[in-house]
Image (cartoon, rainbow, N blue to C red):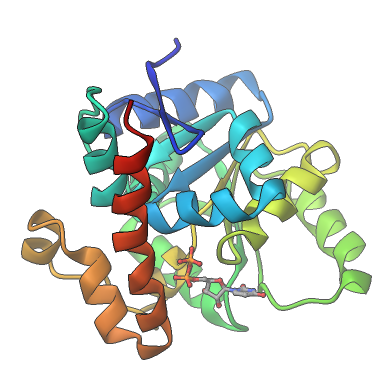
Length: 242
Ligand code: UDP
């Protein structure tokens, strides 16, 4: 099944619902396809306008979902349908929730030492029967890469959640895609931190008010500079409107 694509500053974002994104990822796991899924918020799309490698990865990714109110706004502003936000964290939870009944194997890769293990414990408590077949923190040197790849291959996951931050996770997944042989890989940013409880998501009412970006910027001062990406994004999208 293919979904309508909306190009936002050249990044092809799929106009689909969360249920459709989950269904697509499930099909790729069934087919053992080797798919790369990216979750594009305004900040990632802005990064892609300056980072050729990231831009090319997003152009060839199997699926780019609209992670963020900014992305959904941009599609609407450009005159296209975009049914809803498909946040990376939520997509990951939906897939984890379905993992036990399908007997899926899941690997958590990324975040500071100890976080992936905590996220695994959390997943085992929230999604009984889930098989998290491996964890690995996201701080490594080039010399460690082959060992990490071996670790992931040996664990034979159906789903790989890579939480190395943007654009590291996208570049790493793309570079090692063939060696990894994982049916579905997703770059999920701070998802493991949120699962482990080391970072918080915005309360639901803030998410519903489409202000999660503001919450994250204010809560993590080191991200405050990143808040500027949003007005820049709004300006660039408007300027790109024909
Ligand atoms: N991270 C990592 N390796 C690195 C840099 C970052 O594993 O070399 C992790 C970091 O610990 C955090 C995640 O990547 O868990 C990035 O989270 P953030 O919310 O900043 O994601 P982004 O907004 O960049 O997608």
